[in-house]
Length: 310
Length: 304
Image 1 (tube, chains in turn blue, yellow):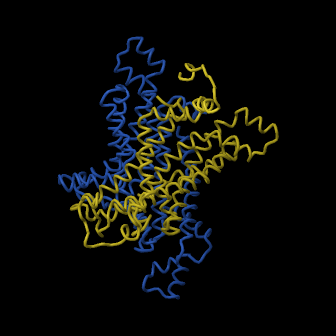
Image 2: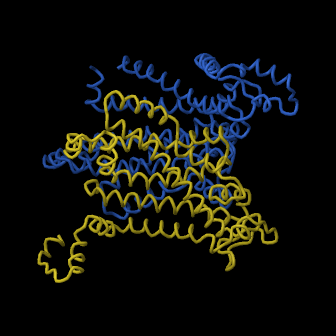
Image 3: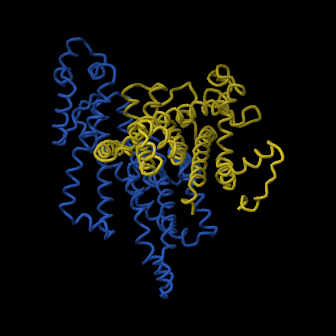
């Protein structure tokens, strides 16, 4: 197993490298001179040329890329053009906020989505099941940023229960962003759990279990659930990417200083090292979460586990 | 069931023959199957309404005099008979802006999916048809892009090339392409082994011809379904980028940038963010329902 994890971690390196190369070359094509942005009104020909030399911007792109990667492997994301501070400092401060929002959203969605999905599958034609399907359809179609605005209107403006922006009220200020970010995700988890449960319940081994006189509770939770959870785990893992895309919007709606906000600000200020840093970190998180899903798969499913032994 | 109970046919006229024959056609059967699915029909109706709104937008409200012309005297009026959804912070009719926004969203959404279908479809078809090393090379490359959420990839492209409509189409199109490559690849792999492909190859057809005339035609079902669903995602993506200020720029009306500019006034004038949001919501809902309905119609085995 450990060998497998190490192999997968090594396989991550080319993925991250290719991805940085692509993003690096896309951003390299940005028209205009970076030194003009950095120096602003102080810009003169000589200062610009000196700075270009200092930052290595006068070298060919591939050389710049190689240097960037070399630093990246040491955890150095370069200097921000705007603040002139290491990008790493900004990222590490902001990642904490993003981390909490994403974790809260995930916990909320998994702990609500799976049980609701199971209940909806075990009572397929009930009012509960039907209404949950409507909710999940709404969830899939709901734009995150609009949901956020509506929640602010309801819970902060009219009811005054929860803060509408910032992170200064601890857990309270996490509730609305987490719900906003997670609604879509929860709808997906719910739909997947329901349909894979429905599938599992129709299998022969469930009929056998029922025929043997196993209680309905044990049939559902011991026999069906273990098999039905696999697609749900896939969805939970695959959609981490979706969550990170959504976090950009959520942080904008709730004015939270997180990685997503940093990315948008950096794009608007044309702060290339910062954009690159934020994107690389996010891609890394997605790659890691995909790896975790595969590991959970191997842990739960004996067939997959057997494959990795080979 | 219908067809087996009506075997007695008297083709007295040619017209009558065609009428009988039409009932048997695959398209007609599919249409009947589609119409039996109430949510799919709801999706189709909603989508037709949105498309009609987009087509008639210019007739209903003139772009230059109503949609982008600032009229401060009319600013932030609530919904009324003259302005069904009220007016925005610059005194422009929100309904008119939503209708013109539908044009922008649909055009860019469909064009972007076209780009990703072309790029992703080409890679996916080649990977699925040839298999082996080429397949794993292409798909590994696509997997790399799947590590980055599509909104973020689109953001990076727009950031580099500027916020024009064409760049937006390319950005969204390219960021969806890896997903299409996967869809097309698996569809192609499903039909690759069929006898008619072997037959075509045995009479000396070239690969490209086989892919175009036999393979792609026979995987249209799943591709059409995915196109519908991805137009929804593309519309959502445009709205998201515009909301962040990286998409369609003012004064051009777009649902996402309407929400972004209305946000500031939402505490006192909530209707300003309700209507554009509803427009996004219903478009995505319509396309999702339509896509699911098409899937059930084209592949009844998947339906539970």
